[in-house]
Image 1 (cartoon, rainbow, N blue to C red):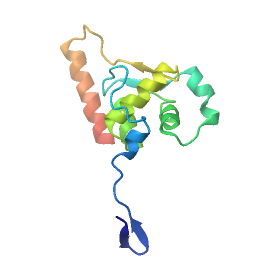
Image 2: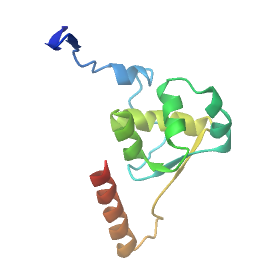
Image 3: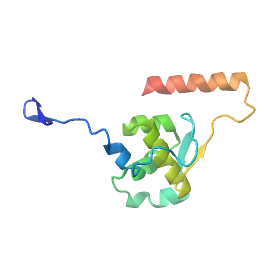
Length: 126
């Protein structure tokens, strides 16, 4: 349903299915990626940066020229976290991005606490 929000601006209905169209309807990534994991574009991804289009995959590659957390990428693209997980896992399979865990398996309480502080700080900055 389209109406008018005011001074000539059309009001648009939310397109709930649209982001999932970018993932070809897939809702589960091929790998598990934590929300705080850092995503960074690889050399192959950087090489293709000059040929970027407006696709969501290309936007993720462009955003991750500097390392960003998965949740930050989702917030900047204004996409659901699940959609971004699928996109990032696709890019990983193509060698366009790498994903770095922020904590190792044997991380202590102090490291986990510091990570939680960084995540909270990042959320506030968004």
